[in-house]
Length: 272
Image (cartoon, rainbow, N blue to C red; front, side):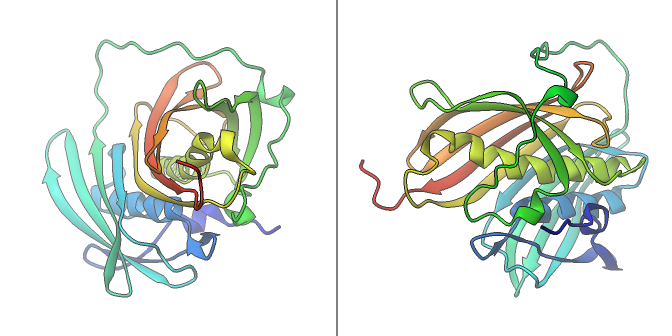
């Protein structure tokens, strides 16, 4: 199994003005990995916003499949440039069509009162077993960038709601580039969240899946060079659309990011 150089994969190449070029990576079933395209969109916007502002959110809508191993053009448009916030839109184009559009907001650090939910108590990552599961049809290389460990037994009972908690850490250190760390979190969440919703149905027959929209909110500075706990649950799957949400915590319990995703998951021949 090969391993992707995630630092290079996250950085699209500057062309001119607000345009950047990148290469799509196979995700599975013959199409490119959408999480990689969304992560590159964030990094393209970050290059325009500047290093003094870190992203506070990204909202991506997937419009059409991307062909792997072909160029993707990222076109950055400024929507707002204020004293505290910068907001940019990135359109990812391939073969003259928009495949993905993302709105990314950046914020200057501010101080004030704070509160957060308490992180669940789980075993330390060093004591957890590696999660070597590769979802059917998935390119294993897009998961090989991360060391993934089972923090708690997965819940796969559709009578309740599917849930899983894992530890993750990037295998390749990303250093002090906060934008790259945010991009890596976008990448990983799109790997994991669709399969959280699908836990009760693995092995029940063929499925056709695709991300519809994907959002992350970044609350604090963090590093994917260190272990992060990803707590996920899927409260509903109906009408071929599955919704999953998740929270990322540091080892000392700080909530650093929240994610939400809607995924198209069709099961041909399934009984209504």
